[in-house]
Length: 74
Image (cartoon, rainbow, N blue to C red; front, side, top):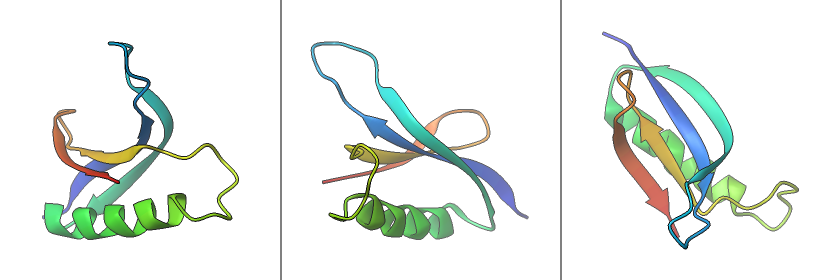
């Protein structure tokens, strides 16, 4: 059964400031493992030198209830 997940590109400003969400992508997948693999590939792309947007510190995966299930960071 396919589930819906959100992949968020986030910046961690520090000093107890809230996480800044730079971008969000909604995906449907058979398993969390598929979404993890996609997230790792996206993170590598988002950190490439030719990336024009602000660099994300991390990508995180949220499930349908909004709980963080996975985080990919440098």
